[in-house]
Amino acid sequence: MQAEHVLVNGAFAARGTAALDVSVVIVSYNTQAVLRKCLDHVTRGLELVRAEVIVVDNSSIDGSAEMVAREFSHVRLIRSCENLGFAAANNLAFEAASGRYLVLLNSDAFVVPDAIRLALSHMDRDPGIGAGGARLVGTDGSWQPSIRSFPSVLNGILTFTGLAGRYPKSRFFGRADRTWADPAVPASTDWVPGAFTIIRKKALEKTGPFDHSFFLYYEEVDLCLRLQRAGYEIRYFPDVVVVHIGGESSKQQEGLKLSKTGKQLTLWRLRSEFLYFRKHHGEKARLAMWSERTWHFLRLARNICRGEAGRLKVDESRLLIKLIDQAWDETRGGRLAPPRPW
Image 1 (cartoon, rainbow, N blue to C red):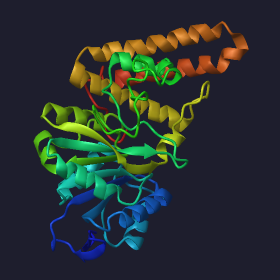
Image 2: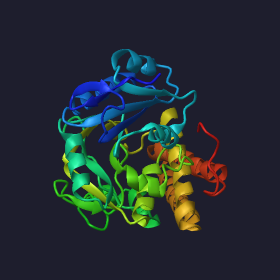
Image 3: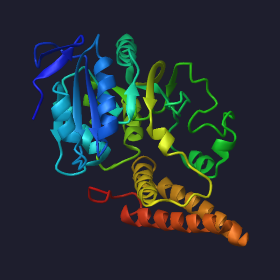
Image 4: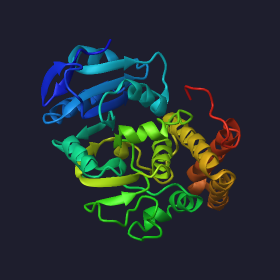
């Protein structure tokens, strides 16, 4: 059921009584606790903005949708009967959104006061900006990668070999996540993470919404590339600060066995990677696949020689090779997205 009110300068007003600046879109899947905190922060952050908040619940079983309906009467709640993934769920909200801008916000991301108003002012000042991103920080204030370069075979190699992490201040090795750059300096970029993205609705009308072939991962990369091809700029706004939990939970640990969830997310990442490369770079999809597969094969061979000391890494490499082969087969070399939900 849709809410009857929107937020206009911090107060509730009947829907349709005022033109809206922004539609804040949050996709949730079994994230009740952080979703509540996210909505609390959003509500406080819209005091000087004419806005609506839309939550798309991806068939959660933890009571997330019921919590939103019960505690946040101003939120427009869209319930999906299945887990649509990130792209398709956001597209549902896009169809219902009334704002001049769309703000995509992860349910585990918390906007600081004035963040949304600042993002709106940046977008209004330059009609050539199609999308903008925030400065993402962890709960401890540490910077998270917020301004990124488009995926390439080289960028992938630098990342999965660990060279990017070893030499973050190098313009060459740190190129994928631009870890060499000062996070306090605004910049044009290739793409910004979907944890917080503000999108000009008129630009989206030119490019079309997310490609729902991507269930999770790479959907925002694909959209930013299409926005640039349509003549728009992607910008990073360092004064728009968002606290993001997700980056902390996904930190990689050397030699760590992949959990069941980790295996699933890795498989989804690989599927989306192959779909992206095939869509935009043709046969480079095969090169991307073989470069990562070869690296893990070499890593496996090296650690077999270490005996028991290398056993965990051998098991991990074997699993990753298996997942690469599975993702390649399931997407037919990046040509076909598996049926949803993944």
